[in-house]
Length: 324
Image 1 (cartoon, rainbow, N blue to C red):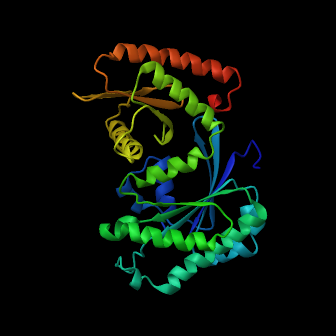
Image 2: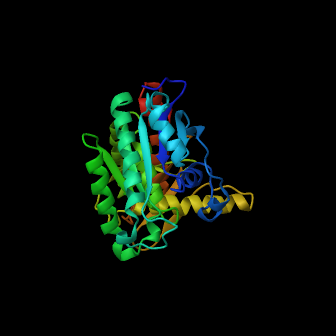
Image 3: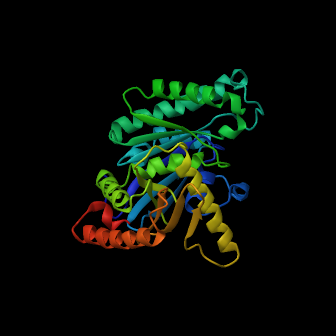
């Protein structure tokens, strides 16, 4: 395990031009997607100590992807890089910018083979030095693939990566900096690092029951990544959380440009009301209610009581309480 003062060691790997630094900057440094072309290429390894949910520190190793660096990682630097890793995020481009084509038959077998070659070395290194690490594979720049081909392309990459990572449990996501898919993937990654997450989910279920809410959702304050949620009814849109993350993040950035700050907002129509407001020091809560008999004042009162309850849980030693 990583030392407590170092935080959770997270490796961000992939070949040059995969978009690793861009996605990191959008999630943690409030970059807009259109501004990421100003970022420079990562040389060797850039270390970042990122705070998420206040006390949860991510010790992120952004590993430059030029071939000379990749070969060095798996030869002379294997132990240094892969020892004590809790998470590996491996990024592969769904289609090469240089090819200008989304046709897999033109994808350049040597390039695909090299991607899988390096990924296989990463899996071997993890098995030796961090066998319990979680592995997330991001099939990135999926927006460059024609919409009709995206699911097929994602399945092919997922199949090849899974076959390469024999004995390792990996999760694959198709991502793009231009839509909400990036937030979905990174929410899942951070979710894996939050202690006692199931206890937190039980507490959110209790809040939803007390508020008679359709859904209660918890977001991290700065990144607005999803932390956890509890639903009391089936929701039609399975991508709603990452869409909300993306929308609110953009709104917060717009507020910053005019030197004001985002506090809260409410969306209300004839079918439901949804309120987003601060919850604890490092989190925001969204409460969705469709029952017109439930007044907003009652929901606000219940949230105030829930805040006190969570403070008591934190004082009582709940692992997740220290981060919210």
